[in-house]
Image (tube, rainbow, N blue to C red; front, side):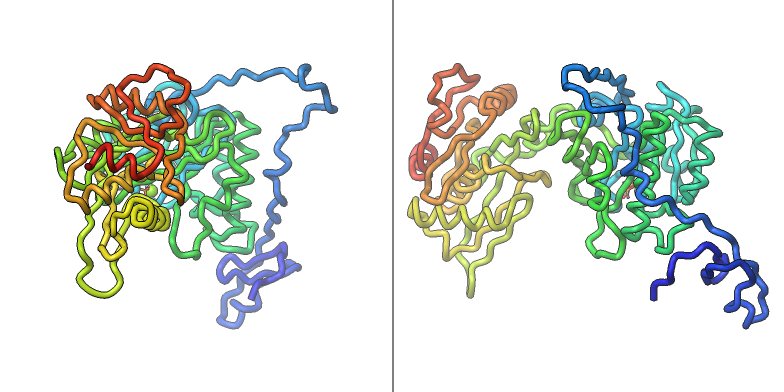
Length: 453
Ligand code: TYD
Ligand code: MG
């Protein structure tokens, strides 16, 4: 049962009362414990962050602030942040437990501490010794980096006045708490209120603040989504536990473009930047194997070449299976239906497995034609040539529709030695010069004719 909010609390059993005195619950077992007064948490402080600037003014009279960013000199992270972290901004880094959030922030904090000391790293889930051990492994020796195991936000606030850090890391938002609140750390109420408090601290002090937020499958603790509306920047750290590569994506950024992408590799000594992610994903690509097709996805401004693999085999019994890794399951089912109905490739009775090699992920419709061709190539046991890139969104009538950023995608492919591309015919209308030879196709059937027949 939820107790009413009150001002006096027993620090042993949590009994709350509106009046001072001793705790009646503990008195029964012979302990006379004085109730301690608690200040109720300020309500929704985050919404009152000082943004006010007098009265309304015409747009052109409002001065533009030039923000000086702090660079972490971890290139991939800086780019995703929009060129470095903005002082006074709140950055939320979400991701599944074990993906490498603490590792990345320890590395970033150490780089920041070299350039803008001191930096305070508050660990609310690991002891200072554990964090130190990680730092040893990462080769971090920066003096300007202060480490503190603490989870009371009030205590953190008090230390900020002492330490006066330029940047603050809170690892994690689900394990810090405000003692004045009824609910447990990690609950929606705690996560919101702590987030709001840290927001006003960051804004008030011009403090660059990073919050770690664990993404959990069960609903027992509030996920980072509860804070997305509040913070300035939301980055998600993704990847497969069993693959070395990790992708950092911006999904919200008040100080930069969203959908920017940073690629890292988890190694023995922490996260390393991957300068040439396309090369990384294509490194182990088999040559002339049926079912393998390369597509170029575009996340923000960054093209990324990915290898799509499909395996189509007769179903042994019952309903044919469809297994999809790294792409949207429903989209793949739709594309297989289009392949059957519009191009006459009978995949409905076949087991189909689709995978993005290297643990990559495809979120864009521009990879549709690649998925269709990979499945067709596997079914027909006919390889797609190794130096051909495939691009195009596929509609339900089997039409191939235009994609955005064609030239950027083709340029990336040309740099990695691709010579030809099969692209939507409607993309070639303007006759612009392209970095490699492009064949326009208007339908799935046509694409199969060009590449597989
Ligand atoms: P961690 O940063 O603790 O994850 P999170 O904070 O997101 O929960 O990273 C944990 C994983 O990273 C762990 O499984 C070990 C691995 N790791 C390495 O492979 N190399 C390293 O140098 C470090 C520090 C961690
Ligand atoms: Mg961690």
